[in-house]
Length: 324
Ligand SMILES: NC(=O)c1ccc[n+]([C@@H]2O[C@H](COP(=O)([O-])OP(=O)(O)OC[C@H]3O[C@@H](n4cnc5c(N)ncnc54)[C@H](OP(=O)(O)O)[C@@H]3O)[C@@H](O)[C@H]2O)c1
Image (cartoon, rainbow, N blue to C red; front, side, top):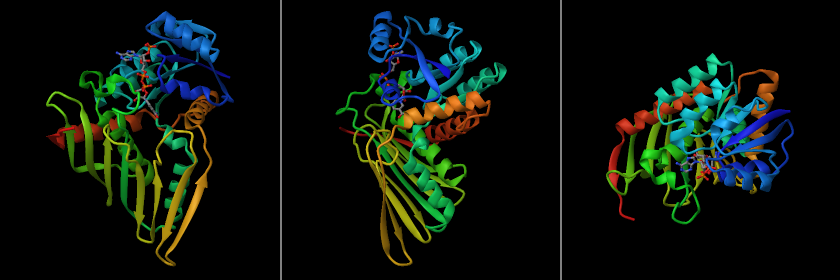
């Protein structure tokens, strides 16, 4: 059993307790506030509860940490965890810049610990099936990806850091990073920005909506992400057909449906995937990699590429103001 500690009583960390873990056990929780650690610990039966993140990192009975802190703290605590000899599963985005990810990779390499960025969507049966269909050639040569990945932050409870630029807020860090990762994951090619637009409410504010067009070795990918709507959709178009899934990236434990349209006979097939918990599957995979001493994917090099693309988007996309 891999012994895991969690840094921060984050909302997303709760997803790890909705199904039993097979090869890992969460033995410690840390918060900036001892009372919050105690409350979270007693709610989920976590035995060790710390009032600082550093105290958890100093616990020798912990093999790995899960870091669901706001984006601006990912680098700092990954580096500290690595120096404390802990493997790190860090939430997306891995960090705020490629320079930060390089420091994280160096720290993990130096201390012989693994680093993995938390792209839970890769652990969904639906997404794996989409990748399988692409590889099978059933929809022909894929030449189009259309990804909409948004939520309306005014209508759902989410950490305020998401709209604070100084804390790594903004939809590109929060959701746009998925588009970059998804395009590479599906095509096996590096997404390069063609053009894009970031929408902010004020000049100093975080990006609230963004549309970016990438080219991934001939595949056109149009990725819209945002914090002002909940329109979510995935489409992959190929020379022989296409496939679509509503809210395909979502980690919610709901049934997923994939529609596959084939040009040859104009058929439309629906595949249904029962509700599952990708967060638990992700942590189990990470624990398995640690147990077997094999490098996990997505690894730190993948994170580095993600941040390089994101930096190119920030550098090249035009900025517009929106009225909401
Ligand atoms: N993979 C996914 O599907 C997914 C989904 C949602 C979020 N995420 C990622 O997970 C991370 C956490 O997101 P969340 O929505 O769970 O956030 P959240 O509920 O606000 O939790 C963040 C935690 O970080 C700690 N923290 C430390 N410094 C903070 C600060 N200055 N402001 C706010 N919190 C601070 C807090 O824990 P203490 O007060 O206990 O110290 C807080 O509970 C983010 O990186 C986000 O991108 C991933």
